[in-house]
Length: 439
Ligand code: GDP
Image (cartoon, rainbow, N blue to C red; front, side, top):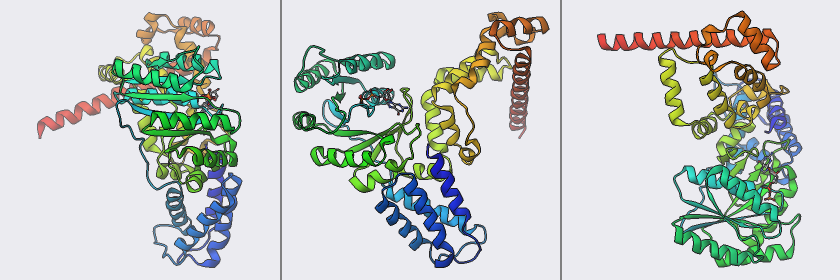
C-alpha cells in the first residue's frame, strides 16, 4: 500500500538541505517534489496544491531544533497536514434503533458483498447479534456469495432468492430480525457497473423506507479519480454517512484515500486490504498519514493481531513455552494464526521503517509453504517430540515433503534456536521472580 508514494515523499524530504531556519528558498523545491509525488499518486490536483501550500506556510520560519533535521521537521508537518486532510480523527459508525440498520451502497464490483461479510464479522466480534440481508436482486451469485460468507463467519444471512423486490425483502428481513432478537441488520444492495438512474432510485427508496442509522458508500480505490467522482454522485443522491475504501492492498496509488474526504466532505470509516474476512481496518487518518510517510502503523498491527489471535490458544501456547514444551504442532498452529492476520507484505509495511526496506521483496503466504510441508511430513510423535528427529528421519521427512535435506536441517536448527531462546527467557523470568521474592 502506498509504496511508491512513500518512496517519492522520502526522496523529496531528503532534498531539503541545511540546518537552522526553514526558509522560502530551501523549502520551495522540496514542497514542489511533495506536490508532484501526491499528483503521481492520483491525488486531485487542487487538493495536492492546497495541502502543499499549507505545508509550506506551516514550515516557513519554524525554528529547527538541534535534535531534528529540517527534513524531519517537514515530515512531521506533512504528517499533520495529511491527517487533517483525511478528516483529523476517526469517526465511528452509528448504531441506533431496534434493530440498527446499516445500508451498504456502491457500484458493482466495488466490494460491497465482501465488505458486508467483513462488517458482520467485526460486529459479531464486538458481541452484537447480527443479521446480513441479501438485497442484490439482479445478481443471484451475490446472494450465494453472501450466504457462503455468512456461514464462514457464523452470522445468519436473510435472503429471498425468488423475490425481485428489494424493499420487500429488506422489510421482511427487519421483521425477522425483530422476531429473532437480532439487534443489527446489514443490508447489501444491488450495484451497477456505472451510475444509472434506476439503481439510484432503488437505493434512494430503500434508504427512505428503512431509515438506516448508517449508510455507507463502498468504493474501489484502484479506480483512482473515478472513485472520487462516483462518491460525489452517490452522495448527492443518498447523503451517505461514510465511505469504505476497498482494495487498498492492490497496486493502488492511494490518491483516493487522500482526496476523497476533502472533496466529498464525508469521513472514510473503513479500509479493506484483501479478500479475507479479517482484512478490514477502522480508518484512522493519523495512522494512515504515518503509513503514507513510511512511519509505519504499529497500533493497527497490534489491533489486527488481537483480532486474529485466539486468546485461549495464546494462553495454551504460553503455558507450553513456560514448561519448555513447545513443539512442532504448536509451531504450526502459530503459523496458521499469523496467516490469518492478512497479507504478510502489508503487515511488514506497518512496522516503522520496514516498508522501505521490504520494497521489491516478494513475500507472501506461500513463503510459509515449504515450512508447513516439512512439518506436515513429520509423524505426530516427531512433531510432539522434536528431539527424536535424527538423520534418517530427516531424510524421510525431506522426501515426504518434496524438499531437500538442507531445508529440513535449516528448519530444525531454527526451531532449536527458538527453543533455546524460549528456555533462556524462562530462566530470566524465573530469576526475576526469585529476585522479587528476595526483596
Ligand atoms: P460487489 O459487486 O460490490 O458486491 O463486489 P464483491 O464483494 O463481489 O467484490 C468484487 C471482487 O473484489 C471480489 O472478487 C472480491 O473478492 C474482491 N475484493 C473485495 N474487497 C477486496 C479487497 O479489499 N482487496 C482485494 N484484493 N479484493 C477485494
